[in-house]
Image 1 (tube, rainbow, N blue to C red):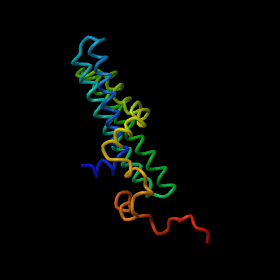
Image 2 (image 1 turned 30 degrees about the vertical axis):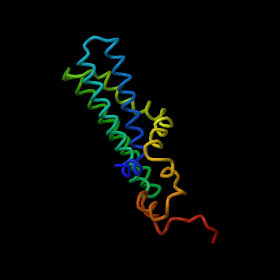
Image 3 (image 1 turned 90 degrees about the vertical axis):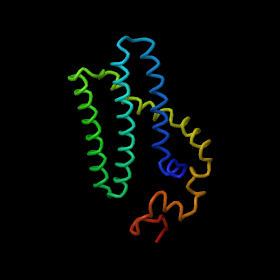
Length: 162
């Protein structure tokens, strides 16, 4: 479990932030608004969507890193459009069905942005759970870096003068 946490630590830290913001937003919803179930279902859908969007972003970035310069731009753009239109579709379906509040779905989705802002604080939680060494690549052996982050391509520049 700890190894997976270290391997995907940015994603885990975003998930922690999404969860924390979800608790804060839910508290506000329960204290300040009526029709609590309708709004809470929307928030839950938005929080799950934010978590899935974070995972898809990590996947897309990893895929783009191996796609070359032109391929990376296309991969990132397609990933963004897929996330954007899926989120819009979910909010439209919620509005049409009347089962969940599209506004709180949006609030849940925006928790991803808020989680990115508090990432330095959630990183401190990660350091307490995993220790500080795994987060400094130069302190990890080359074999371990290759296993966690993938082997560098042979045609990649090494930074040495020729």
